[in-house]
Amino acid sequence: MIRSMHAELLKLRRPAIIYGAGGAMLGFALLATVLTYATATTAAAASFVGGDSLTSTVGQLGQSGGLTRGFTIAAGFIGLLVFVLFTTSMTSEYGLGTIRVLLLKQPRRARLLAGKLLALLACVAVVLFAAELLSGAAAIVLAHTRGIPTASWFTAAGQRHVAGDYINALLVAGLFGTVGMTVGVLTRSTPLALGIGLAWLAPLEHLIQLSWSGAGNWLPGLVFDAVAAGGTTTTTYPRALITALAYAALALAVGAVSFLRRDVSI
Image (cartoon, rainbow, N blue to C red; front, side, top):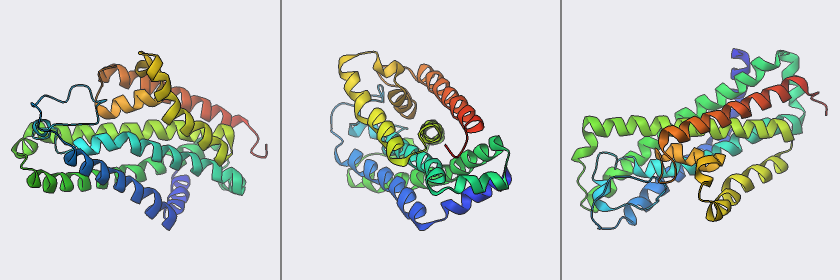
């Protein structure tokens, strides 16, 4: 499995991945932070209840969770980028025929799949850490320009928010990534996998939500977003987390069975 991880890490060192995927994740975090502070209203302060709202007030941003508010909003969008990264990492192996070479070097398919998954998660964890640092630095600068107090950010409660928001973002990345890899294993085609996955996770689920009030409790993309937000007005964080982990476990099981049993030439 270590050799499989090393092989995947070598692939991830390509400039297209580092500057493309990594830069996009950092860019989303920075953009979300800038927009959060630029659009913050001066309405009465309230706690961050109902994480499905993308707008904030100046009073809310001055609370202990304000430092990483922009990063939290960006986590759901970053999850879609992670979905693309994991999906294409798998489908490209089939499209280029390199999956056969990998299986010659590592015939134990379970170890190969686990190595690829862990290597991708490790890289995403590093990028998310950098994204949170960038978002936090931007938040400090923007808070001073708008006269938002930052004392609560550096309290024990504030630091718990920082750690918790990073863990949630990493969880969401793992959830989207696991589903993405499974879709890649099942379809073996980059256009087909991205077409199906992004169409469902992005517009279709939100369209369904307009006519079904309970969609946020069950649809995977909406549930993953609820985990990133720490819960929403539709579903609580514990319920969203349990449902999301169940989806991830199911996706991992389906993907693993398909990868272990299907002929790579088909």
